[in-house]
Length: 396
Ligand code: 1WB
Ligand code: MN
Image (cartoon, rainbow, N blue to C red):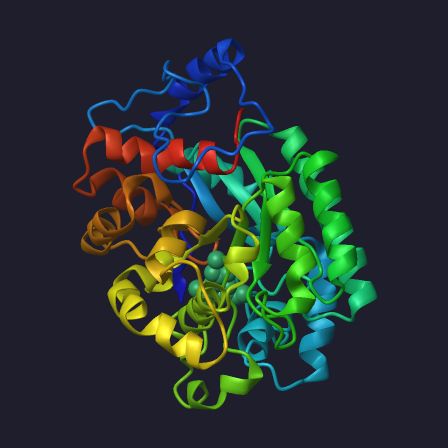
């Protein structure tokens, strides 16, 4: 897929002046009180308050925080390669093999970009005027490893991530990983990631060995995220083993379709299991324009509660009310202005953030989408950076 790889050009350097000005203005700005979580719906301001240091200029050059940007470390990449070589049943393995176990002589897909920060990534951000990547350990994270190894590699990658963010505090922020295989250890690591490492939230790649977050054994994870007031990015992976078969024939298990089905199903489980009544302040972020859920909301409301009741679950709210209270979405990999306008109308401008999905999606078209979508200056600023600053507490 050569079109997905873009050579970095430094020609487009119009963003540089704005960045210098920003550095100066950041020093003047106030920081958010770390203990309060502004409501997703309703709060429109940036954490800096009234004074907006980056007013949109003619709707085009706007500060840009990309919120689903993949990254990895060699130790995790090696461990994923070992999993690939063990050849389990997981639908994820075909795609992961292309990245982590490419036959000798074939160019590696995505791996160099995933493992890099200082060379290609920052240059590509500069070339397209992207101010910040919110980094996260790429799919499948540590979720395909044995529990002890998952716990150790989550710690290691969170340490590395915080070092990188400390080196580039105005360009990079980060979501912490954890190993859902060991929910107690996960909760401890989540606490360390926020309170010690000062990371901006969490990433989880949907199911873990077939276990979903609504299941009671996962509750320590939801409890930790809620208590820490930090959002949980529910990133896709391929459909779990129990629903894998129909996705095999035409290679539709990945980003093309299966990812959205898996992550969307996971979110529907959260909205119908009653678990969100137990954790009313939990915040979840979905990529890919909400994994199609905004489009499904009317039907979920119409049919969701009766079905869940028949299955023995009670829910205080309707799916659309849970969605409003708990979820925000990003635009990763869905550069469709019509879908964006639908989501703004359906779930509100405060709950939508821009993302590229680097390196799996090319940067320049994602930037062009953000800059050219028919939005007011106010809407564009909210999607481009203000909502991300508020939701992920990005203060640099
Ligand atoms: C793709 C996207 C492939 C993601 C991936 O392999 C991950 C893709 C790990 O678009 O081909 C992702 O994380 O969004
Ligand atoms: Mn992604």
